[in-house]
Image (cartoon, rainbow, N blue to C red):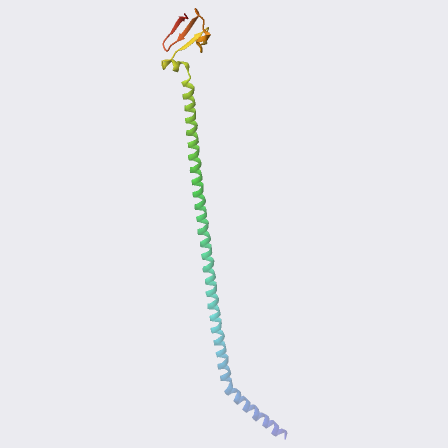
Amino acid sequence: MEYIIEENLSLQRLQFEKKLSSIAPLILQEISKGELFVERLFGKLSFSSNQFLSKEYSNTLKSVKSFELLSRMRIAYSQSSVKQLTNTLTNQSLRYIDNQHTYIDRTNSTNTSFDPSIILQRGYSITLLNGKILKDSNHVKKGETIRTLLNKGELKSTVV
């Protein structure tokens, strides 16, 4: 009986090996399909991640370029503002200096217009009594000597 069991077991083993040998190519084929599926999935993931990284790199590069452009625009605007302020300050300083020159010229003109020699050149005269300018005829008595200054020369007169 032992022999029968052993023979039976051997027979079952042979049948199992036969089934296994017929199933093995199918299993290998399924494993191969699985490997191919994993490779394709990995390729898709790799492609997707590369696309994502490329897009992120592109976006980062755009941001950097935008920041650089914005910085250059701000610098140009600041330089323009400084130039405008410099021009304004220069123009106002020059205008102030011109106004001061005009004021000085007017002041000098006014001062020289009261210069006695200028008054005499215009045809006026200055009359003195005892070395002082005579402003009122009531301050002079008969017989006093007055001196009249002219542009060219002077006159001595006696009040009558």
